Amino acid sequence: MWLPTAPWYEFVIRGAFIYAFLLVILRITGKRQVGQLAPFDLILLLVLSNSVQNAMIGQDSSILGGCITAMTLIAMNYVVSWATFKSKWFAGLIEGRPLRLIHDGCIDHRALDACKLTIHELNAALRAEGVGSLENVHVAMLENTGRISVIQRNDTISSGGIEPSS
Image 1 (cartoon, rainbow, N blue to C red):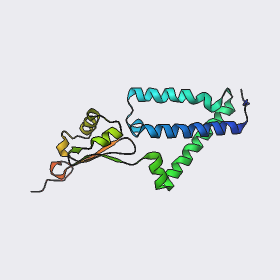
Image 2 (cartoon, rainbow, N blue to C red):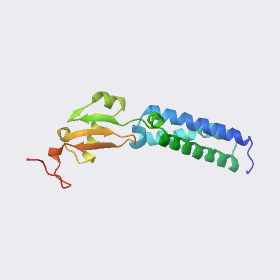
Image 3 (cartoon, rainbow, N blue to C red):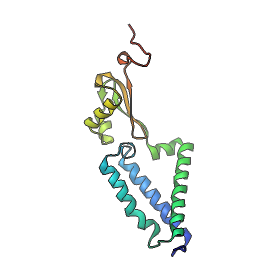
Image 4 (cartoon, rainbow, N blue to C red):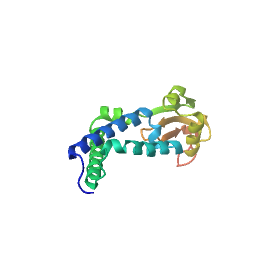
């Protein structure tokens, strides 16, 4: 129960490799996976974690083996977080860059295709931001977090103390 059946460094190597593998795979699948999880996306992540569990710990079921693997994953996450903070290049590689979806009321369909976002999902995000029409959008950006941020045109803003110019 307490003693692992493999050397400690095997857990570190396995955990680090699986962490890096999942980081690359989830990064390739796009930003949408991070911030806008549909029910099937959540199921995929849960099943994915279960599928790599044995690859991380092998046949070992000891408490110490699980703790070593968990510490390795936390350490890898800390290293990646620190590296993305220190390096803009690495942050762009790992987190991606914001993507402009709408500019002056015009949808960039190539950007939508690149991030696998449908018009219906875009319209839902606009409605969630209180925007009823594309013509009211100056810029809509898909942020690194998966959230869509919207900047309305100045002449359509009527709240927040900003009045349209006469």
